[in-house]
Amino acid sequence: MSVEKVKQSYSDVQKEKIFETEFLPHINSMYNFAYRLTFDEDDAKDLVQETYLKAFRFLNSFQQGTNAKAWLFRILKNSFINDFRKKSKQPPKIDYQEVETYYNSDSVDVSMTTDLRVETVQHMIGDEVSNALNALAVDFRTVIILCDLEGFTYEEMSKILDIPIGTVRSRLHRSRNLLKEKLQTYAKSMGYNK
Amino acid sequence: MATNLFNWLKQSVLGRSSCKRCLELLELITDEEASPEEVKHFHNHINECLPCYESYNLEKSIKEMLQTKLEKKQVPDDLIQSIKLKIRNNL
Ligand SMILES: [Zn+2]
Image (cartoon, rainbow over all chains, first blue to last red; front, side, top):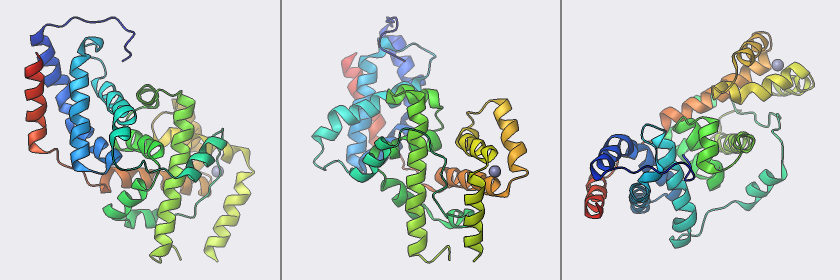
């Protein structure tokens, strides 16, 4: 996963094979992740393309048969942060209060902050779910995508995001509470949950 | 009224250490990151504790909602071709 590991030296044929069999199969997940970060189809395309070209360029740092999906997601997320967010015309969408509250809470608290009910959640339609998720600041949105949509383990997430597992857990917890708040606000506005 | 009663129940169980432990385990359980002992402990608890059982169901239903209800975008047809072409030119 990391660049410090032993460099491989693949032939061009091997490179093409790894690319086809281990990298390209993840393009659906990659594109959807990119779209959920950028909210724009063209931006998502550019980001995915940039990620694949980087992955190919650094292919010798990738060990065949290891976790290609996590490796690709890590490159995509870094490309988004380092290059993409700067280039993008859109200002980054950050809810500062959310970020601040998060960084001020250092432990995994167990408070049940929500009155949200299972029946309400089950009645939500795709657009409502999508709006709630998209309303979260990108760091919070990202952990939910990685964990709940893509099924990465905490350890994989820790590597993709370059943060300790404890931070993965607390960020996930915080993100889920925020998501519940958004869903709850929405449910109230629709008159559910009387 | 029912909601108030439920909230009161939730508040009162927060003081119980077994519930606190249970809620700490909650996400580990739904994320399948808990050890077999933790899973056993957790299920023993929710079998006897309605508020924790409700919390567990809520957590599970949110995860399920995210997995099933979000629209998955189709990768644009030309993207793979465009990537492959750029790679070939680099080989
Ligand atoms: Zn309990």
